[in-house]
Image (cartoon, rainbow, N blue to C red; front, side, top):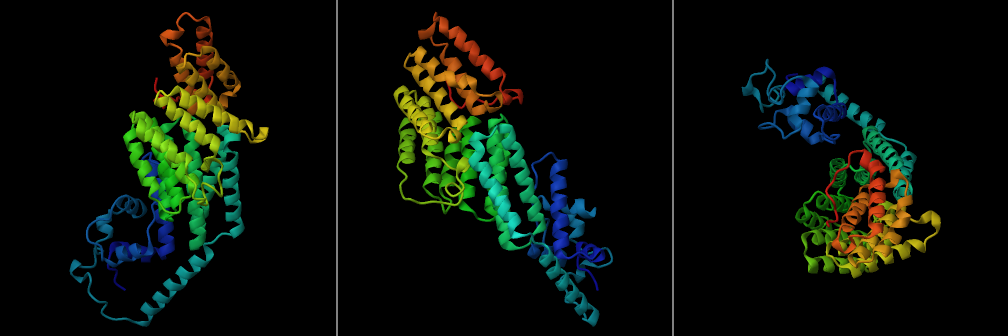
Length: 444
């Protein structure tokens, strides 16, 4: 039977069904991305596209990365693969098959049976997916009470597990669960990469999470990932882009109050960086006024790092007030955060949020000229283990160090000692040893 394209001829020669071709394509896409030093590729090919490629119904060359991937698999350029094979004249493209015989029908039947067999064999036990869901939820909820290095290790394992499961199943509902778990794991990896001082890795992983959310049209995951990208944008010195990303995130469907509160907090911080006080305070007000009782399965049902409880809202708003040089607002918000944290059992107190709120309280007091009060607020922070001293803590401590240089404190004996302790604190931090040198999220 004549082949309409070189690709069709090669696929038939190898005896490949669509599913075998898809798996080879996805594997090659990952190898191409790795060779180029790019993030892991999630490129795949739908059956309709495969049929178009092999039937000669494609005009022009497909979009990237398809040409590179096809060449990697077969050793021919995309143009050659999508053209008639050398022995078939171009004029025959699109012509009806002259005759059909029993062997043609048998081949069609075998292809269909092979396709069904592949699909039936490519599934995983639901309990495996249940365990993956549980592991993601546990890590998200333990995030603020687990050392960053351990969070990174576990989140990486979860992402690898989700990707492996996606390679093993063709059951639509299982693939949806697999993509969701992969997106959640990538989000946790992004957060911990930021804490460990790697802004580029954090950005790449949040984009990966957003793409996984797009594949399954999961609004809360897409909103979370875009919110993270907005947060990372003002850290990278692009607050206007941050506002745009928040606006995009707010448009996704299925968001509950927690998701909208988180996005308003990030929006307020972005406007704080832009020096837009009315917009920043309006966003703070919106963050405190979400009361529709709406929930979603990511921010509320899983919660943890995906959640945004009252103490985190207050701590984040304190940072925004500091950007606006509003000492009273920052002090009140930071104290509120610490009060909410203090009301929790010892084993449920989020160390990272507590430390950041304490540092924000110290800086607010510095703005009010209260050196002794600032020192008292910082005292608990100095005992934080080195592996917990992430980027969010280090930039806040750097801002305090800068505040000590204000003329109001010149000549104070305590300034020199406190400044040295802050420098030693940062020098010993894990994020510092990993080479973090991100722009400060709080400016002097």
